[in-house]
Length: 316
Ligand code: SAM
Ligand code: SF4
Image 1 (tube, helix red, strand yellow):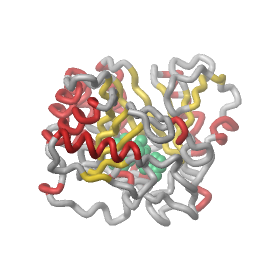
Image 2 (cartoon, protein in one colour):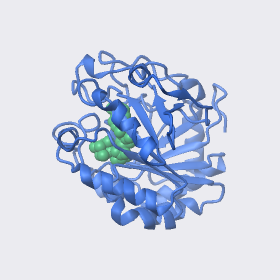
Image 3 (cartoon, helix red, strand yellow):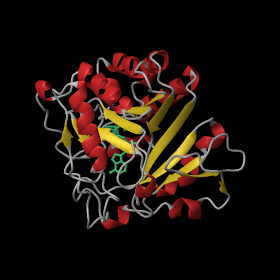
Image 4 (cartoon, protein in one colour):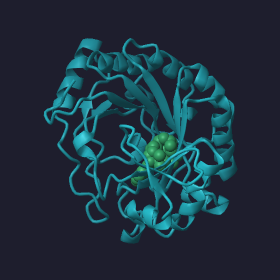
């Protein structure tokens, strides 16, 4: 279905939980999350009904996200049933990777084709600091497991944070030479109020300055500008939601784990679908698609996101 700005909506990001086994500083508040009542969250059947509703309106790609989707007990069943919905051509998943050593092969068998794995640093102490207690080696073993399991694409996501990982840009990008992965640098979005000072917000151009040998590559229809290092097996992608937003070509809807359809990541607009029949979910999807804002508005340290939720409650 096309929205009021002529954008064809073909992609749903489905958050299956708000909870996580890490607590990244840019994603969650210091005190962690306030647990919601089980009965307020979408059931597996409701998630699949929502995917069916979305598919009936022309959505054909679904990304499973969270919180951390791999801590959800029934994640394999959700993936398998999503992949089986008529009209769904591609199921992908975004994860912090720490549970992939056990789950990479089962996810592949459940129909997940592509994985995005978050990796902001290669320094174990910095990893523990940014994730508030995570173990870098768990994520690295997860990446190895994903590469061995034979996914059609593995992308690594690093949020660019001034004073934290800007000194690691060459090392992180160098992973594309060692492994067949795409390494993507994502501009930090101001979600959790006051978590970072203005110096943390770096434009994507710092990556181009740090890596003068990057060669531009043809676009692949995604949100990243693509480059490649000499000898690279995969691309280096630059994603700039802040310094050069891509709202004009945004094809996404988001569904939160508590059943709110979000037409835009940074807007407070939400359309509840919990408890609805498939027919009523289709009506809500239509309403939300038609309400999709033309752009996400000013975003900066001084103008935080209007989302009124942290990223773990949206799914990125
Ligand atoms: N737990 C999974 C993970 O970390 O990949 C999936 C959920 S996480 C919310 C999805 C993506 O959002 C991750 O790549 C994460 O780095 C990104 N993210 C979270 N907060 C962000 C922020 N403030 N700015 C930019 N990206 C952010
Ligand atoms: Fe968890 Fe992912 Fe958020 Fe980190 S970015 S706290 S891993 S949901």
